[in-house]
Length: 613
Ligand code: ADP
Ligand code: ZN
Image (cartoon, rainbow, N blue to C red; front, side, top):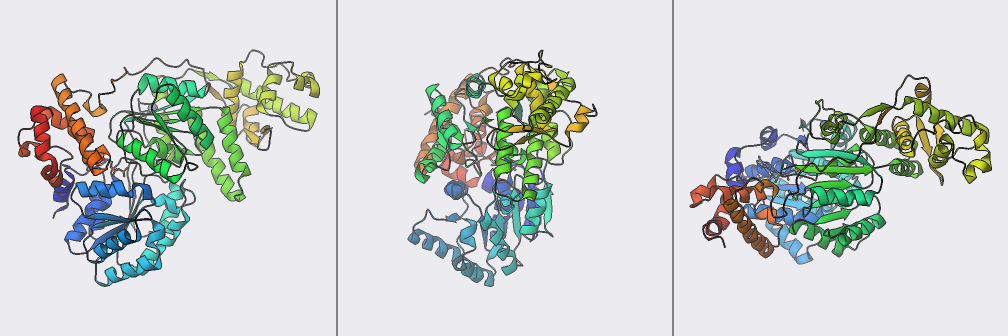
């Protein structure tokens, strides 16, 4: 079957997106590929279409290596819904079930087999692959979440390193590695670790134009978060990322207490509860998941309307990966982060105190600095984000700085005062102090500690009386961000000057401050919870049909034990509601309805459209 035909008949889509076609043609004809595409870009089709095409050409099975055991059931379920023979092998299967899958695999009855890397590289599995390979029935290896092979990525899985065996043992079998994240360093690492140096590289634009980026100064983070959700995302699905398990629990409870349906997720919860919360998030509408970064990889829920960070992530890769989970369906979505001095200090300390080698720490510090610079930026966030991934762009019109350009104030003078104060204190006392004490001195506050060390004698005592504490904090964050002040770990997070301080002191580098802007007025009118983003523009009648279709879909999804979006996306239902199809032919052209779904659900859909039940 031609590739277009597979796309249309199996998946119900009219056209390939972006570089999909080039990638698919390359892989179908036996080439290796490295695919870098943002979350929501459409990576799955890049190996699913070749898997189907090569199977049809008599070349056998595609093995999909994925670390996401908890999601394999739904991924395979989605393929079944589209009429594709797929299965998974993982620890959730009983011995007997696994043996069944293996038998079907060896008989050539499976087109796509999902398995975790530690399973793929066992002698038992490799022996089975040998037997397939001998008969020319090993069509393709797809290595999903390929950044897991690199320690520079944010999800390093040592098991991925063993995957080189695939290339060594089956040099004739093409491989496609896919990831949504990779700066230059990580990409080079992936190529080397997976021996893909000769592979075709397909790098898409990383822009996610439907995501609006907002970074606010942390004051009372929880209240800020509540206000954000209530104003802009009431009743909608979202993810809130927190640094620690404890904080996840606290925030989930606070949200629930405020009437927002929220669930916790972190590695400290027992496996069954974690799985249950994840399933609920995927299957129910409008839930907020409060989670550590343990949550999210591979989550393909299309209608996550916001991703909020209550604590700052480690680096831009992490931030971009996590925020990328919003708005996979292409409808408007928010990436919102609150950050403050304490975040900077915490992240810095975690690096300093980690047992890693100095080289590694140096790289991590560089990555943290890049994220700080993003957070402190007064210009377009997207330009900076994309720039980090090596992409040029122009101001986006869809980030906080573009929408509400912050008033910028020259903070160089204040910065110099702060630096001299750090210097004087160190000189006078022989030890350094933390941010709070430094600010007290600058503002001329007579505290106990000031008296204890005689710091009111310093020439810098009270030289920044006119500055507010929040201005001073902003200056300090900036200085840390540009590396002009270092924070030493240990109990007190003391401040010290660096090689970078000199340029600021000499006036060679200026410090720009965002003037504290009050929180902007609500930007979007609140949407009613019944209105799906894809269905915003529906008229009243269409709206009713849409709601009926959703109710029908929920029923089917429950019966099949799958998330609703695996049956049909909201956008597909909205289009059906609008077009009011009378016949199966009418349904055929609608995006997301392939041959199998037409056959399985067409008649029911027509009935729901006709009589609204
Ligand atoms: P990724 O794995 O890159 O994050 P997915 O493979 O999950 O992205 O695709 C994101 C969404 O886009 C999915 O809902 C998918 O069905 C849809 N999609 C992918 N390719 C196409 C296409 N060519 N036409 C229409 N929809 C597509
Ligand atoms: Zn912008």
